[in-house]
Amino acid sequence: MHNFTGRIAVITGAGSGIGRGLALALAAEDCDLALIDINPAAIDETARQCAEVSDIAVSTHECDVADAAAVERTADAVRGAHGVEHVNVLVNNAGIGSVEGFVHGDRAAWELTFDVCWGGVYHCCRSFVPLIVAADEGLIVNVSSVNGMWASLGPNRTHTSYSAAKFAVRGFTEALLTEMRLVAPHVKVAVVMPGHIGTNILSNSQAQMGRRPTANLAETEAAFQASAPTTPAEAARVILDGVRAGRWRILVGADAELLDGSLRADPEGAYEPSFVEQLHEQGAFVGLIDPV
Ligand SMILES: NC(=O)c1ccc[n+]([C@@H]2O[C@H](COP(=O)([O-])OP(=O)(O)OC[C@H]3O[C@@H](n4cnc5c(N)ncnc54)[C@H](O)[C@@H]3O)[C@@H](O)[C@H]2O)c1
Image (cartoon, rainbow, N blue to C red; front, side, top):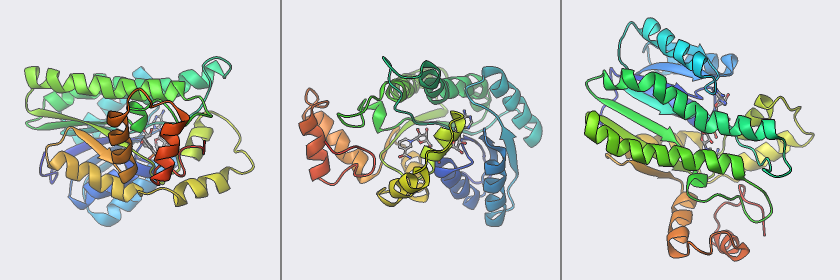
């Protein structure tokens, strides 16, 4: 899709970070928006900022994307709010992070991470893809992660749930690419694999897990943001430039590009401490990955 003007885009996780960045970038191109988030105050704020950019139609929808029935109701609400039987763009961006252990960790937290990061993409595709297929031109953008190609945050932490979910997002999206060419060639598909982006993902994830913020959360998140090589607004620009260029595999950030190259050069060594040492030596993932 080369031109978003006059189109309708659905964005999940639009209340913060990359999702808000995409909403503002699409608003600047006069694309109507249906903004979805579990946090109603956060999407109201995104909608307010979008209204400052353009007088497009913006609807807001409080919804937990891990809840299939809620997503189905939200798809009905989007059709009603915009008076349409189609949408042009679906960005499955909502996600939370956790390093919950599989063996010793809290099973509920492990499953919540998986259900939001993978289940959210699955449920939203189930409910919104028929509306995308009904459009004259459609685009599905699924936000995976570098953890959709590398299931690790370094040798000192477990990362099973988020990685499993992000590999699922990538695998599903890559398979959907062929399916859409077969059954709905007017629908394009892209998988996004961001590196470290300076967002509020740490505090938003803690909040959704019902955990009280740890004493140093604000400080940790400030450091996470300060050390990120890419801002949410820059990530949004890379994603939109990528789909405009017709790309289906969109890496965001020099760190993601570096990791991609390193994995191709040494796939068997990917989970060795020396692999992470080399990434650190090249300046990648300073804030995202523990030192060895
Ligand atoms: N920040 C990074 O370094 C990074 C790196 C790779 C991938 N990602 C991915 O990018 C996406 C966006 O993350 P971000 O960094 O902008 O985080 P963020 O926390 O700043 O924004 C995510 C938004 O999603 C919403 N959300 C979370 N769970 C939800 C649910 N169950 N239902 C509906 N909305 C929900 C949150 O309320 C929040 O507004 C996520 O899928 C994340 O996994 C982020």
